[in-house]
Amino acid sequence: MKAVVITTPGGPEVLQLQEVEDPEYGDDDVLIRVAATALNRADTNQRKGSYPPPKGASPLLGLECSGTIEAVGRNVSRWKIGDQVCALLSGGGYAEKVAVPAGQVLPVPTGVSLKDAASFPEVACTVWSTVFMMSKLSGGETFLIQGGSSGIGTFAIQIAKYVGAKVFVTAGSEEKLAACKNLGADVCINYKTEDFVARVKEETQGKGVDVILDNVGGPYFQRNIDSLNFDGRLFIIGFMGGTVAEVNLQGLLARRLTVQAAGLRYRSTENKALIVSEVEKNVWPAIVAGKVKPVVYKYLPLSEAAEAHRLIETSNHIGKILLVA
Image 1 (cartoon, rainbow, N blue to C red):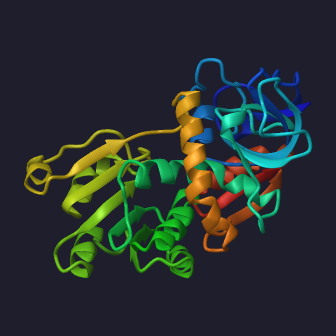
Image 2: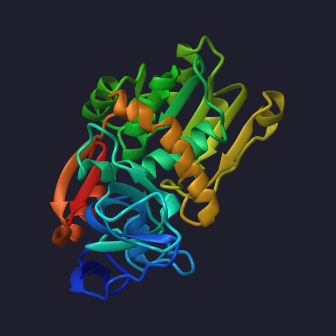
């Protein structure tokens, strides 16, 4: 099969489409013929050599995909050859075929194209497992998303509105803020021209928000803490701004704050299956009802993976970038 290979750690130009061996699938796996895969920031880190795949996972890029099941392992009962699905992967999506544990597979939601279904698994599993399963965001609460126009952000806005939260977002341009507003964000803050802490306080009568989803890390740590209400929860899913911070811990104690951090990729197969099952139960109905829609910025062929990486690294995109096999 053809797959995008990291020829050596480096810039986008190191990505090349090459002929490689078909993946082997086990008794508990399915083999998917890939229709599309979606880019994630983690892919760029893996390409640079700073985010290795988990032990035993495919060395290829790609943390999610959509496609058609081509073969099933002997222990798999739910799925059959020909089923149209999307899946959460530990790697291997930038290819014509990928093997994945059956518990990480989801049906393509009714009303969503096979191609666009590739935009959902990683964002849905990330946001549901962090914001909802761990930080317990509920209807009537306030929720701040740092980077509202990203793939994660555009999904998080929609699912948070679906459950009845009031949504605050930050983004770096008026175009991005307008896109967030169109998706349902209530308060849109340009972090380049405004102090988000001051604006959050102003909009919440000095209280702060209940939950924050952050992928900036170090530089925002203190400011995120300053933006939280009593019993507020900060969830960190990335370090785009760096990993080091100096923090005054007093606010944590005084306002009973919780700080958590987690990723998806290194979780156990069992844990991923649990998250995927919760996503199907709680998120899929919202997608089927048209309350959560795919937000796709651009489709590129697999052969243009390098161009797709250049694009995601400019941060000019809104939503997801898809590679079509």
